[in-house]
Length: 230
Image 1 (cartoon, rainbow, N blue to C red):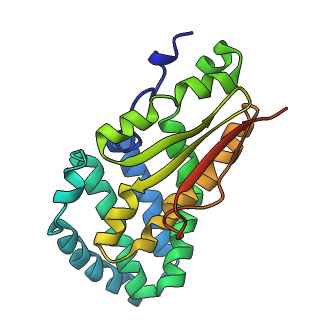
Image 2 (cartoon, rainbow, N blue to C red):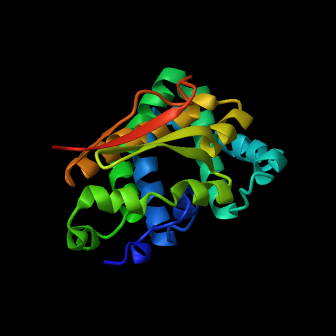
């Protein structure tokens, strides 16, 4: 089994998201809009549309030179993420911060599992390898280098042995883009998406996923831990 040939191997997370095909992006947008507009009154929907357009203009004018200097040049990913942040910002203005967070959490609950599967290795390849824990230990090994090159994450391998491995994230472009739009909390639903998708996905392969904190929530790092279930 050649792990290097499996889907997503050695590719930065931002590049995986940026490479989603038009059909899938349209599906995600349709689901997201249905959830968002389903939570708003007619007046709120009208206001949201107007405020969103203004926030998109603001996003288009952002100075991203510092982020691009780190290697982030994936225009498709940047546009996709800024559109999301503009929507979150507009929603916060129209519905309030608490409702905006709750609504976007609902969006992630409905979309994150399929989005993660879109960027994950083929199940048949994992089964063929035999030892799923060892598969993912090797599959994720090039992730820090790929993310550093793409300028999306400063992610470091903090622990690596036959029973567990852990990645610590010390800088995150998702959070930095949200900060530039003055809504750092917009990154929290992105973190929540991991909580929706990762635990059950990895548990199915005999791996326990856990995390004690995130940069978006004020922690010094995001600690992504993977342990082999005995």
